[in-house]
Image 1 (cartoon, rainbow, N blue to C red):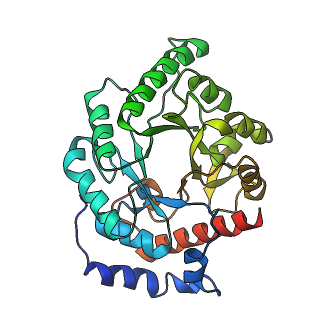
Image 2: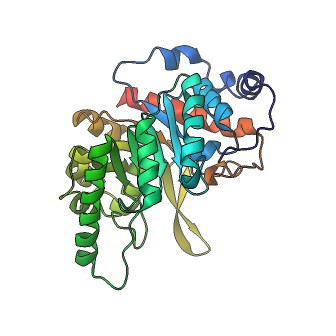
Length: 321
């Protein structure tokens, strides 16, 4: 989907939104030096383009570059920046915009789950030709018709077939662990089972620490140790438990304000030498951008400010770990 291009000349748009009050006031230090002179082993952080779907491709890419991201994790899925049925027309446009901003195509988030589905296969073929390397696939769900072991055995074979297609195309598929009832892989042990029959070079996990802590409580370091050989990409966000209307709920927060122990987590990533692309997610309230809205209820700079703060926090804690 190419978003409506109601904007100032692109350079003016980005400069006015980011440089005038939204970019430099966020820290007393020298911002350009923070992002352009990082250590060699610094995390390569991509912004999840779900949170920039109020922008067209060019403005999205330029905003991500100005903020200091290393790339864009592009949504290529229903209600995403690129609709699957328009992948042949629109994905090249998105990749071209990213290239102009200095980004190589690397990560995308898709609805792909079935190697025999015509649309799924076409999305992967076009992405591979354009140089994409990693894609997040869709989720599997448990059903009442099958037992948990039966579900895992069935989806295990689907993952195996998908990994074979990935291998042919030169892509790496990633299954994200997502907290919640009936999500296959909410438990890291389930995800480990899913991947047992698949080609480990062409499919693996997008490890999400927020969801791992929601489901794992205090045991998440053990599950990280289990799955770390299979980690291909990372998703980063934070949360805390809050009681609302008598119910405990996981509420998303800015990075560092929640329950995720990022210092311990990053220390373990360094210990295991996990060096993979990172997708930064902002799922807390930011005027609708958290949901991927194309029209915001706040000024754009509120979203840019939030991205800048979370990105800065990632690099600060990574250096401390």
